[in-house]
Image 1 (cartoon, rainbow, N blue to C red):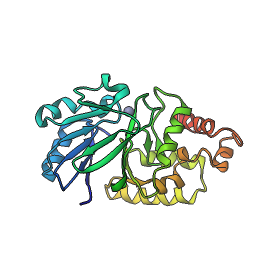
Image 2: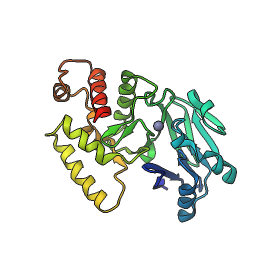
Image 3: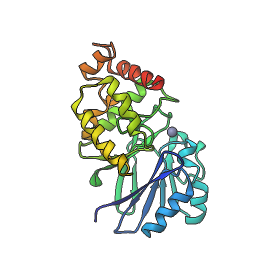
Image 4: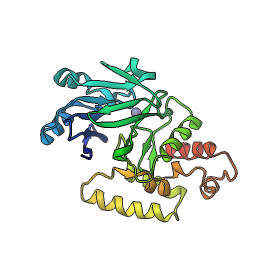
Length: 255
Ligand SMILES: [Zn+2]
C-alpha cells in the first residue's frame, strides 16, 4: 500500500508533516516544531505516532520532541553529527543509512550547509523526500553553519533525485522566494508558470508544497547556478557554480 502524508502548519511558517504506512500503522513526524499541531494532525487522521525523523537541531524543528516522546514513546531518529543538540535521541543516522517507518524504507542523505549535520530523508519507492531547511520551493535555506560550496553540493545531491520525487521542506516561503527568483531569471517560463500556480494555491489557502524535483530544477535559481544564463545574470559568467550559488544566496540575504 502506498504511503500517506499529512501536511500542516506549525508556529508561524514552519511545516509539520506526517508520513504514514497503512500496512503496519506506523507513522513518523518529520521534525517536531511544536507538539500541539502534530497532536491535532494525529487526532484528525487517527494515526499513531511511532517515530520522529529529525533533519537538524534548530529549535523550530525540535521543540515538540519532549512532549511527543513522553506521550507516544516514539523513537527519535536524528542526524549523528548534531545529535548532542537534539533532545531524547534514540538512534543516530548519517549518509547512506537506512531508516524504516513500518514497511516504508528510506535512506539518509547528508545535506550540510544550513547546519553542519543537516540530513534529508529519501523514500525511493514512495518517491518522497523530506529536506528540512536545505531546499525550499524556489529557494533554499540560509547557509548558517556551513559555507556556500558545501550547501551547493548538498543541493546537487537533492537535484540528482529522480524528477518525479515530491519533496517536503521545513517552511512555507514559496511566494517570497518567487519574488526574489524573478530578479535572477525574469524570463524563465517555468518560473513564471510556478508563480501563477503558487498565486492560485495561496489564494485558495492551500500549501504550495510538495513540489517535484523535476519542476524545481527548471525554476529554482538556487538549483540552477551551473546554468550559463544564470551565471551571466549575476555577473559571474564562467565562474564555478558554487561561486554563482554564493552570489545568489548573498543577494537573497539582502533582498
Ligand atoms: Zn533551520
